[in-house]
Image (cartoon, rainbow, N blue to C red):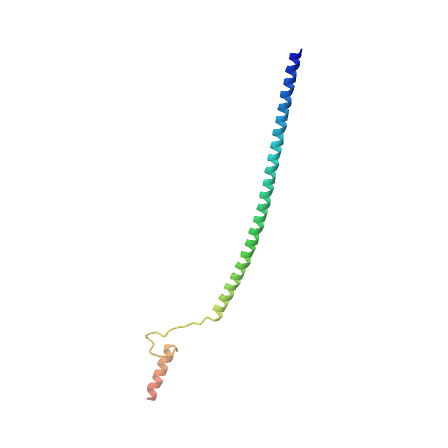
Amino acid sequence: MTGEIDILRKDLADATNAKDSEARNVKKLQLEHEEVLNKMKDLEESKKQAIIKFQVHIDDLTVELEKLQANNESIKQKEDENCLLYTSPSPRDSCASRMPSSACKKKKKQKKKTK
């Protein structure tokens, strides 16, 4: 009978050791799971902060773009207001002034008559 009791004690010890080993493995897996969840939370927070920074940057760029567009419109307006049409005299035009050629011919005729 002692032999059977020793076998039962050994089996009980093995079962207890196996149970303890499983409990340690479960605890280890729980800790790893918790660590992964914490890393995921950290990543999610980093993602939120990056999105906020990106949105602020987009807002800054939008404001800058609006300023540039307003400045461009202002420049276009000033160009339109200050536009001067310059026409150089034609090489065929012997008249030094900028009058149409018919006006120059009339002046020439008047000069000839006065001479």
